[in-house]
Length: 207
Image (cartoon, rainbow, N blue to C red; front, top):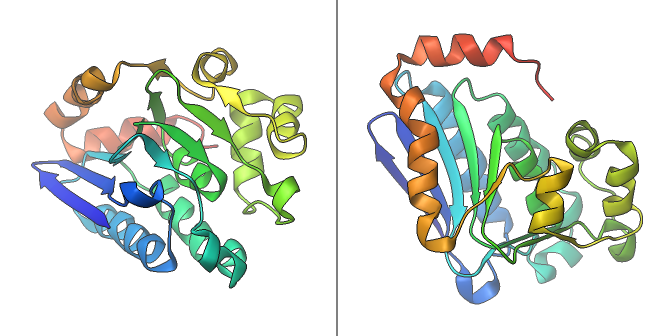
């Protein structure tokens, strides 16, 4: 359910559960966290890409597992923390809607691309769960406190164009051009040394 490919200094991690809208199980989240941690230990990793298969990036937690405790499991923070700590360029290539706890891994990335028609929402108020601790400050750093409250407290569903206007999405790209857009953004980092990539990233304040 998680596909991992490595091509030179680029790691690409694909959520591969399209029949369930790429909803995340504990096993998937653990694999994702372990993969990000392995990428951090790879001295050649310069670009780390997250994407999904199908028409939805991720619907968030698998509902059955969420009811059984996954919604408050520390694995979510482990994953987003591991992505945020990566010393390379990190890109979320959102092939569709981004929802719920899956927001954490995308918020932890340096860049977010999305296809037209994507929506972003995080229905923690409706579902009765708290968001993961690092998600609200990262969200507010991108869109501001009021808009973060619109998403987390008012349950707003944000269309891709509005999300781009807010700064939550960096670029909207046609589905057939998504990989090419990722490759273009990754090119300079892949042509540089890992130390140079890490050095520039370290100069930019973290969210």
